[in-house]
Amino acid sequence: MAIPISQMWTVGSYVFRKRLSGQKRYPLVLMLEPLFRCNLACAGCGKIQYPGHILKKELTPEECFRAIDECGAPMVSIPGGEPLMHPRIVEIVEGMIRRKKYVYLCTNALLLKEKIDGFRPSKYLTFSVHLDGQREHHDFSVCREGGYDLAVEGIREAVRRGFRVTTNTTLFDGADANSVRSFFSEVMDLGVEGIVLSPGYSYEKAPDQKHFLGRARTRRLFRAILSNREKRWKFNMSPLFLEFLMGKRDYRCTPWGAPAYNIFGWQKPCYLLQDGYADTYRELVQSTDWESYGTESGNPKCANCMVSCGYEPSAVHDTFSSIRGLLATARATLFNRYEDRGARNLLTSAYFGAPEANGKLIQIESAETRMEETNV
Ligand code: SF4
Ligand code: SF4
Image (cartoon, rainbow, N blue to C red; front, side, top):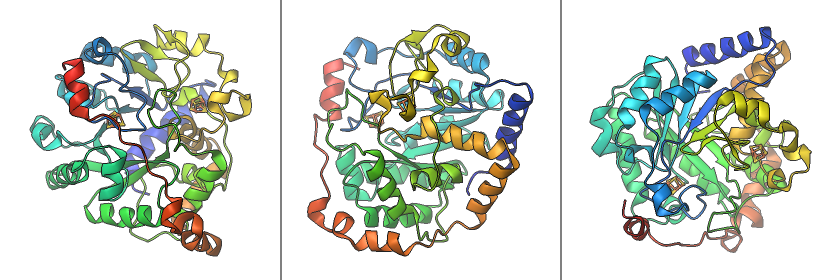
């Protein structure tokens, strides 16, 4: 596992304190979206379809600090939109670091080389670079030729300067499992700390609706990809969450584990769905009908979801809430090769091997066109 001990200690002791205090619902990571605009227009994105006047809006640093102070999560993930397009992003990150929060700044890295001088390396700051696979796959997924090369340049520069860097990959139906495995080796060779993975979520607003994974297909894909691991692969994620993706364990969604805050307020119930907004974190926790969410709830919007923001907090909670969970995590960390002949066969099967089985994401309008339209 690639997560530094100090970060694990911070999270573990936080969960322990919450459990001791009897608090049932607590946040692990704040999903902070300081803006929705982006310099890419990926086909699977559910964030950039807002009208121009919304895309022009952004949170102030003070609003961001109020959100983290209100919820108290030990980690902050800053997706977007593209956070590096926020004119005060350095101030936001520094304020989080001053509060000793572990920040994952999620970026497509197109602007990373240009903006990196503003940041200082810290154990609290990780650049989490969006890469959806090898060059051809990534460029197709983000609908931008040359996107992969620019992202890799940004990664190399950040690694060279001593920053913590991870990659951040979303997988859709039709993903080429063999190519994804080669991609893991390529990114580890770049010197990143680890890899972050998630299946895509079928946003209603995303232009490509055909390539989101159902649960059975998600498990098959992740079993093929994550079994028989190479030694050098490191994942900056809960090992129990990876087992969940591989179909080795089951969890209920804990959407309150990763509350989302953006220009509209606290989003109900999670980063993916928009069933209203609350003005405060307390109101979010108290006024959301949590039982109506998660796969077991029967809510069709949650039926196929295995996304990290809902289920990784469940895995982390499992790790730190019992001796059994700690032992399972230790085992998953120490014995992490997952030898599986059936999974090897999957890699050579028609499902993952035949080119015609690999669906293509559709191309949508270019990012430049979108930016011109919104005049941002
Ligand atoms: S990089 Fe792609 S997925 Fe991420 S916010 Fe921009 S358009 Fe959306
Ligand atoms: S199952 Fe997915 S979409 Fe539903 S609440 Fe959980 S994270 Fe959100």
